[in-house]
Amino acid sequence: MMGVDILLERYRNGDIFALSRLITLCEDGEYHFEEPGVENYHVIGVTGGPGVGKSSVIDRLAAKFLDDGVRVAVLAVDPSGPFTQGAFLGDRVRMRDLNTRGVYIRSMASRGILGGLGPAVCDAINLLAGFGFTRIFVETVGAGQADIDVMNVADTILLVMAPGMGDEIQILKAGIMEIADVYVVNKSDVEEASFLRGQLEALLMMDESGRSRQIVNTSCVLDRGFEELKMVVEKHYADMVSSGEIAERRRRRKRYFVTKLVMKEIQESLDSINIDGLNFEEIKKMLCRRFLGQSM
Amino acid sequence: MGRKIRVLVAKPGLDGHDRGAKVVAHALRDAGMEVIYTGLRQTPEQIVTAAIQEDVDVIGLSILSGAHMELCGRILDLMKEKGLNVPIFVGGIIPDEDVEKLKEMGIAEVYGPGTSLSKIVEDIRTAVGERK
Image (cartoon, rainbow over all chains, first blue to last red; front, top):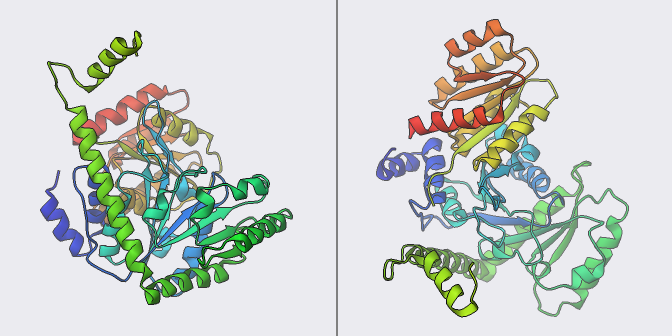
């Protein structure tokens, strides 16, 4: 295994192998990359339920960015399994043409982390920004109502929705519905999409937070709506830069990153605990026996 | 946390039968590996680029079109050109007389119909274990 110092030097010289290996080291918890060393980059979080079209939306939207000549990278997270910790990472299937256009795509497994992201997303964002990518997509796992960690890492959050996933009661629920900067009504070629759009418009009318939130209709099969989506996303970033909110979002990410590292340290010290010859698992079992009278 | 085995499973060329690739990908997943599945009709360029970006330990190719000599040759050439050095395993419909030729070219192993999934898992573990 090549040393980290050599990898970092090669990374700084623009070596894509070194970038990829460093991300692997961060995923394996052997290294952390805490600062990108640059300011001018935009992290676009893309979340939403399974099958709503997150990867396909990224594919079409990234193509619009490429037309403008910017450098694009994608971090796509899919779940690890609970039984063998294996993963089937299938987001590249929807982004077939991006890698021939110079987009760096990295699939990541969630590795037991709840919240919709994986263990090394922050390191990877920093590594990609430092490498010169200026639009960095972070695609979450197919998210549930409470998978909201992406709000802690992205500058702009797109919530991708598709028609047919429930009535407006679902839309009124707290959690993931609240974190979006942009609601993307995907599959808008399907007739029921207009109902979803109407429900979202009603939701935003009720919103008194003063946040600027937009709704954009897209259709991947018709390649429709992505020029508008790009403009909305770009404007959101420009507004954050001029209002200074971008600094708050970056602080939020740093806080999340540091918290995760600390939690990991705590978990590791728990895992390596040894009291009277008992490890953490054995202590838990002993306590269960003692207080509940049952084995675990 | 420990090191995970990452495998790229790709289907180069023009045939559209990906059931085999999916079955193998599923088995590797259940064996605890992280499988990056690229889907159908990948060019050799796309496969090598994906393998570099994903920092995989192994590449698995599924080929049923009969174009295995050309596709494998092109992928091996590109890997050499870019400096990527990982074992390639090929599965699919490969005539016996081509199996040895593929291995001479640098393909690690070739699997035909009826191969047990546990053999593929073991071979990958062995190949990766030897490299780490």
